[in-house]
Picture 1 (tube, rainbow, N blue to C red):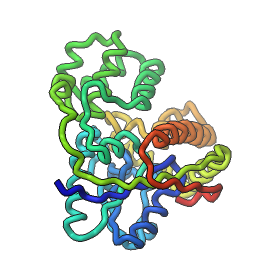
Picture 2 (picture 1 turned 135 degrees about the horizontal axis):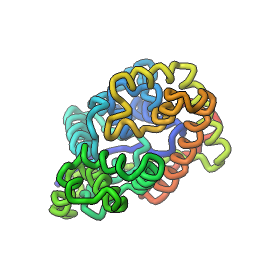
Picture 3 (picture 1 turned 60 degrees about the vertical axis):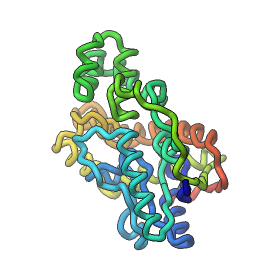
Length: 298
């Protein structure tokens, strides 16, 4: 089987992946496939740092704006769409470039490894347990019901660990637990990846990039973007509602936090996420590492 060459630009948020990928695409006649789990939602633009038309510089971008915020989006669905895009780009004589920071999605795509019942997303699991602590077990159980009614019927709301696991399977495997059990890891990897990792060894410099980018998002109208999405039901959605840069506004809209507190919370959560991303990508089989400095542009 002929394997399709695929480039990937990975790294923590605010490291400059988008700009780097555009420049790479110009050099190697490439097109970009988003590897970000939230940029695929329509209307979530500023808070996800989705590249604007000007920033794309004429380079075609794929897997942006492919879902409504009301839709749960799984790793399984991403893998299907991304694989189709890779083959379509390669078929036109162009080079596919995956760019993003959602480690699970990108690793599964580039390794050809299929999801199984035991696969998971530690960051998502952490978020779900935190949600249960803050909102209560019943609220978590209702999130499961919206994703998998049969599992919700079978699992008691107080069994938080099992509820978390069932939600995790739905949102990463794109199927119920029983369906996930049938998945197999067998099969050849159809892609030949070249992974370029952007990293910022100076943690303070990375945090400075994050803080400046969040400030720029507020200046660009992030509050109004989130408010508009909430009017469309963002807070009740199964997946999009938990996006960093959006969920922090909910207490503010309820009159519980100030806008300054919202901005600081977004910065804090983004820093934590960037740390998890650095850990995830440090364990991948990387062909090239690029160190970035304090310039926050991405």
